[in-house]
Structure formats: structure tokens, C-alpha cells
Image 1 (cartoon, protein in one colour):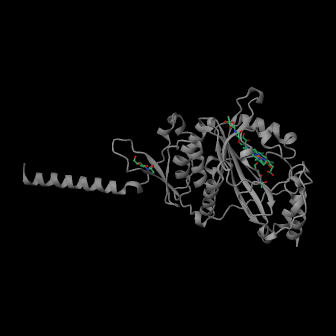
Image 2 (image 1 turned 120 degrees about the vertical axis):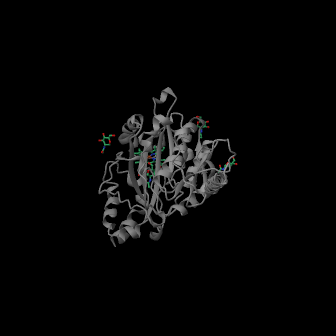
Length: 378
Ligand code: HEM
Ligand SMILES: *[C@@H]1O[C@H](CO)[C@@H](O)[C@H](O)[C@H]1NC(C)=O
Ligand SMILES: *[C@@H]1O[C@H](CO)[C@@H](O)[C@H](O)[C@H]1NC(C)=O
Ligand SMILES: *[C@@H]1O[C@H](CO)[C@@H](O)[C@H](O)[C@H]1NC(C)=O
Ligand SMILES: *[C@@H]1O[C@H](CO)[C@@H](O)[C@H](O)[C@H]1NC(C)=O
């Protein structure tokens, strides 16, 4: 072999080793393509589907994004489903409150156990399906400036390398393969996403006629209810405290939940006024039948318009329904200063002028109504 040939072979070998070492050193930092397919049983069938057509927010800067401003009030309150179509891309919403909110959520998950996270056995496959899609597909595709897929380079070679999700916000790695229990999966979802997720399945009891029941949840920010007391209940039983539900909503809701097709995503918003700023509120935001509404002094500086942006969609594989909501709070001082004071004041009056006058009572309008209206109009 000539000297020249030997020389070029050894330089080639050196070059290859350097390139190999370089690739290895990139290791965990190298972003990979989203990873839904091989983790799903029917990956091929769904990979082209709508749940993978997610529009990326390429230049999204969560720290510079103000919370969306929802002003859903109407002069009269009519109790309807009021659902609108949306897209799977818009399932979540992120803004500058993200880091503070997820810190609070983690504390609540640690302190309150099954008040905020719980799941029955039969919902585990649905939770795993949603978890894998959320961590492996939705988050990295929708929010690439916050979440990226990386390979776990500490795995023994030969083992199939396992992708992970990295949060660029918290610098944590998150497994894409679901953890071993649904409660752990829900806790991780709740620790990285500022949205509540509630999972429903048709009842297996023939007497329930296919009505949907709550089977699992992560609900860190309930507005005045304890989700523990709602698990295993049908929609109608979940909503018993809501005046007018049985006569105005129950039938259409049951039909809607039973027939919502895979691929159709709907949203709605609701509102109330609360005289505290607690995101985690097990009670106190509603008045129930038979309760006293005694005089209460109201701190207008702590009084907020509380809105939820809610979505509902069906998982393609397990066919479970996922009800999700994100909570927003706007100081009523802000509503007044932006010039919407009269509109909110009128909507408060409209609670008792609509299809369900007892709504004013349920939303505690009887407690805060006068003081808040007076403030908004002053
Ligand atoms: C998308 C369909 C839904 C509609 C139209 C709806 C409607 C309502 C309405 C009108 C209220 C009264 C509070 C308000 O908004 O002012 C309410 C309360 C509530 N909803 Fe729903 N809801 C829906 C889905 C769900 C689902 C799927 C769950 C749970 C899995 C749920 C859980 C609750 C709870 C826990 C309350 C509070 C009840 C209480 O005071 O104890 N809702 N809902
Ligand atoms: C929502 O989409 C469905 C098709 O999935 C359509 O039939 C319906 O009219 C749409 N509703 C609205 C309010 O646009
Ligand atoms: C990466 O793989 C190693 C070896 O299998 C494992 O010990 C480690 O827990 C994995 N890292 C994560 C974040 O899953
Ligand atoms: C809900 O039902 C499941 C069985 O499906 C049962 O194991 C669980 O204890 C029930 N939870 C409550 C709080 O009643
Ligand atoms: C909004 O609706 C949700 C679910 O339907 C309910 O839990 C909550 O109490 C309502 N929130 C407000 C602020 O009225």
C-alpha cells in the first residue's frame, strides 16, 4: 500500500471518530422529530390524522405573552351549552403566568393528594394515550420554544434509544412513555401544563344508559367544588348543584357527549365574580340550595372576574372524552379601568333576568352583587 493511501485511510478514520464523538457530545441537546408513531399501537393509522396536524408557534415567547382577555358577559344570562368549534392546535393556551402557575400546581399536587389528582383503574389506558400524545406530540410541535424532544443518550447501546421531552423553561426532562400509574401521569401533566384535565367514559352500568361518568382528573384550580366528590358521577349528578341543569342542559349535554366524533374539538367560556383570588378553591364560590347568605364584607381589591376557557374532545384510540379548562382572573378594578364596568354591572343584573334566575344565587351574586355593581359604576 502506498504511503499516500495509508495516510488518507488513517485521516478518514480520524475524521469519522471525531464526527462520532461530536455527535455523542451533542447527545441530549439534539432536538429530534416528534415521536408519536412507534409508541402507539395503531400508530400508522393515526399518524396522518388531525391529532398530528398541529400548527407550531415558532417564535412564541411565553414570558412576553399576556394572558388572553375573556369578556364573555351578556346582558342576560341564558343557560346553554354555548359551544364553538376550535382546532386541536388551540387545545392549550400559555402565557407569562406559566411558571408561577406550575409552581403553585406542584405544591397543590404535593399537599392535597386525591383532592387534585385521582384516577380509576379503567381510565388508565386513556390517560396513557393522552399523556403520550401530549408529551410526545402536542407540546413539542405546538410550543417548540418551550419543549423539545431529545434522545436519552445514557441508555445502554443496543437498547432502543428512548426519546424524552425537555422543558426549556424548567430544564427538566420528562418521559414520553407514560409512567406506571395513571395518577403519576396525571401529576406530571398537571406539573407541566397550566390546564385541568378531566377524563370521562360511558358508564358500564346498563341502568345508566351510556351516560358519561368522571373516571379521572387533575384539577388544581377548582372554582368552588371538590373534584373528589365528583368522581364516578354522571354529568347530571356532577351538576346537581347547578340550578336549571336538569331542565335546560341535561338532555342536550348527554346527547352531545355520546355523539361527539373523534376529531371534533369544541370550546366554551364561563364567568363568575369571586371575592377572593384563590386559584385552588374547594368551596365558597357558590351558594347551594339551603345555605345561608349572611352579610360578608367584601374587599374590592381582591375581587376578580374569574373565567374558564374550556374544551372537550375525544381521544382517537380509547374513545374517552377529555374535558379541559384553564382559569383566568382579572381584577374588577381592571375591568372598570378598561371601560367594561357598565357591561359587567349589567351582566350581573342579567344573572337574574335570564333563563335561570336562580343563577344569581348560585354564583353568589346575592353576596357580592351590590357592592361590585356600585364599584363598577362609581
Ligand atoms: C361542555 C359541557 C359543559 C357545560 C355546558 C357545563 C355547564 C356548567 C355550568 C353552566 C355550570 C355552572 C357554573 C357556571 O358555569 O356558571 C357548571 C358547573 C360545574 N361543572 Fe360543568 N359543564 C360542562 C361540562 C362539565 C364536565 C365535563 C365536568 C366534569 C367532568 C363539569 C364539572 C362541573 C362542576 C364540578 C361544576 C361545579 C358544580 C358545583 O357547584 O358543585 N362540567 N357546568
Ligand atoms: C362546527 O363544525 C361542525 C362540523 O364538525 C359543523 O357541522 C358545525 O356547523 C360547526 N359549528 C359552528 C358553530 O361553526
Ligand atoms: C435514561 O436512560 C437511563 C438508562 O436506561 C435511565 O437510567 C434514565 O432514568 C433515563 N433518563 C430518563 C430521564 O428517563
Ligand atoms: C369509584 O369507582 C371505582 C370502581 O370503578 C372504585 O374503585 C372507587 O373506589 C370509586 N371511588 C369513589 C370515590 O367512590
Ligand atoms: C365554570 O364551569 C366549570 C365547569 O363547568 C365550573 O366548575 C366552575 O365552577 C365554573 N366557574 C365559574 C367561575 O363559574
